[in-house]
Structures are given as C-alpha cells and as structure tokens.
Length: 340
Ligand code: CP3
Image (cartoon, rainbow, N blue to C red; front, side):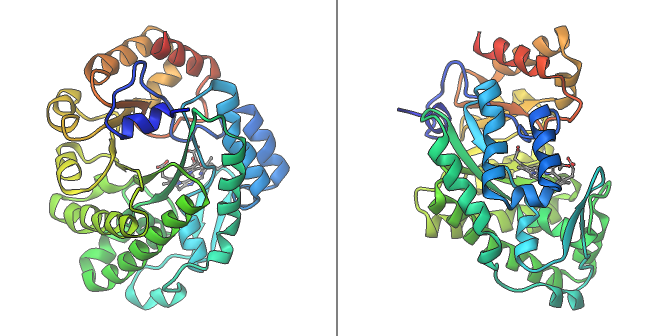
C-alpha cells in the first residue's frame, strides 16, 4: 500500500494533500498529559520505548494523520554526547552550557549509541504497529539549532550566546558544529536502519542569523550533514525546515539536496509557488495561532494555503509546532476542511 506522504516526496502531488503537524504528540492532548504524568518526566518518556511509541501513535489514532513523527527531542544528541541535560516542568530544556572552546571538553566527539538505543527501539515498535498508509518520520535538529541550545543551555529570545561564541571564535565554534554534523548524520542513518521512512531536520533558529552567518552556520552544515547521510543511506528521504529565513529560503531550495522544504507561517506563498515549489515539494505553513483561534479565520487561512500550494507536490502542516492551548475541535475542523 502506498503512503501519500512518500508519494509527495517523490514529487507526485496528492489530492487531498497528506497532512501531519509538528509537535502533534504533545500537551494539547489529554492522553499525552496522562502518559507524561505516568512516566514522571519528559526525558523518561523519550527514553522508554513502550511509552515513546505509545505517545507517537496517540495523534494517529485520534486524527488519522498521514505521518507519525517519532516522539523524542532534538536535544537527545547533546545527551548522547555526554552533555548534562534536564527538562524542568513548565520551563523547557536546561543544559550545562558550553560558551567557549575550552568548555568543549564537556562533550565527546562521538555519540554514545547505548544512550540512544531506546530511540531506535521505539522506532521499531511504532513501525510494527503503524497502518501501512501512514509514513513514519524520524528527525534531528540542524547543527546550528542544536549548537544554540548547547551554548545557551536553554531557550532564549534570540540565542545570543551561540552567536557570540561564533563571532568571537569561529574556529572554536566550527569544532562544535563539526561534531554535530558527524553525529547527526550517524544518528539519522541509524533511525533509517531502525525503520523510519523519512526524516526532518529542524533548523528552528536559522532566522536569527544575518545572511553571511546563515550561509556559514546553517546552509553549509546542513549541506554536509545531508551529504554524509546520503553516503550512508542512498535512498534517504529528507525534509529540511529552516524557520524564519524569509527570502533566504532560496538558498535551501537551490544549494541543498533535499526532498522537501518546510515553510514557516511568515513566508510569502507567491514567492514559494513561483520559485520554490517548481524545484522541490514544500510543506507547511499554517500559523499555529490561527489553529488556536479557529472559526472563519482558520477556514480562510487553510483555503489560502491550499489555493497557492496544493496544485503541486505539497504536504499540509503548521508553520511551527502546535501550541498546548490548541482546542482539539479546531484540529478536527482543519482536517475536515483539507480532506473535504
Ligand atoms: O513533533 C512531535 O510530535 C515529535 C516530538 C518533538 C518534540 N520536540 C517533543 C517535545 C519534536 C520533533 C521536537 C523537536 C524540538 N525540540 C525542536 C525543534 C522543533 C521546534 O519545535 O522548534 C526544539 C527546538 C526542541 C527543544 C525543546 N524541547 C524545547 C525548546 C522544549 C520546550 C518547549 C516546549 O514546548 O515545552 C522541548 C520540550 C518538548 N519537546 C516537549 C515536547 C512534547 C514538551 C515537554 C513536556 O511535555 O513538557
């Protein structure tokens, strides 16, 4: 049985378009909140294969999305590099920060795969339970985005600590980026080995970089990561998601060997329709806040996206992760509007 999402990655447009949502397993679902409470912590949930698999499947059962994305986190890479990491309830991630070259001694050069075995096990478990038409997605963070968390030790408004490290000591910062390129390529290759159909690379913080820095710390490292992954897994299907880069998207569409490009909700769809979609399939880009608002504004926003993008290869998604306050009824309304 074919998987509509994989058809799109092979550049075959589907009507209606396949749909999944970033962060589709998460706090807007009561069944997720119950499992998280039962697991006694977010990392525990990620690292217990049975629970991670169950949480991955929750939104598929409830909504019938066209893809399941493995329940995990981009910060498992720093965890497997030996960086101390924890998730404080309601506060997000915390890591022991690496703000200069000297502090790189805190991490190893290679992933400790024994720490990631639960992830690969969870993939196999989901794969065995998933209906055949639904694609299974793995993921990692882009080197730049993961480096911003490793440097700041948390989410900040503009990830200034990584930008400062990179301006003050580009060669030192490049050492960190190089470790992340190698380990992310290996991590994604193992995810394919365990059974994912495609992967998404999240560059959530690409948008804080000026053009030259964007090229150096986001586009080029992604390019090397993709090349290394393709050398290990020639059939790999790869979606890139650089958030907040505006017309910088052109470089991701032309310079990178991607199978699809994820769009945040601020991009100009006319530009995407004319200059990006003719080159490669696109995914996105409903504003997560309009899904919170619902009503006529939601219908209108969905129609605009479908009018602009569903004539070509297209995957419907949000422009960033679903917000915890999103009403479930609005997700149902959205699916009805897309699928008719
Ligand atoms: O999409 C999915 O459903 C799969 C699971 C997934 C999570 N994180 C679960 C999660 C994925 C793909 C991610 C990626 C991720 N993690 C990114 C890139 C995408 C993005 O959203 O920007 C980033 C930057 C992270 C790092 C991270 N993890 C942050 C900043 C936070 C705190 C913010 C928040 O929403 O709480 C997390 C925690 C996190 N990751 C949660 C979930 C469901 C919330 C944890 C909880 O239950 O309290």
